[in-house]
Image (cartoon, rainbow, N blue to C red; front, side, top):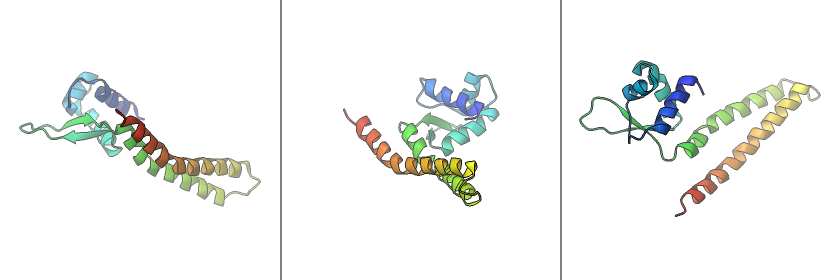
Length: 132
C-alpha cells in the first residue's frame, strides 16, 4: 500500500466520527485535501470506504465500511487472477527443467489454491462474525 493510502486508511481507522471529509483527513494528517484525494479514490475502489449522504453539505463524506476486510479480499481476487495469469504466461515461455519454470509453477499452484479456498474462508468468517 502506498504511504498516503496507508495514512488515509489510518485516519478512517482511528476517527471517532461517523464520517469524515477529505479536508478533515488532510487536517488530521497535516497535508492538503488534494493530496488525500488519490488515496480516498484508491480506498473507495477496493471497497474499504464508502461515500455517505450528507444532506446540506457541499463536501463528500466518507466512512469505513463495516464489511471492509472481507470486501477487500473479494475485490482483490482480480489481483489474484492477474498473478495467476502472469504465472501461466511464464510457465508457457520456459522449459520444464528451468528453475524459473518451477518457481512459476509453484506460484500458479499457490494462487489456484487461494482462489479455491477464499470463498469458503469468507463464508466461515461471515458465519463466525454474525454470531451474537
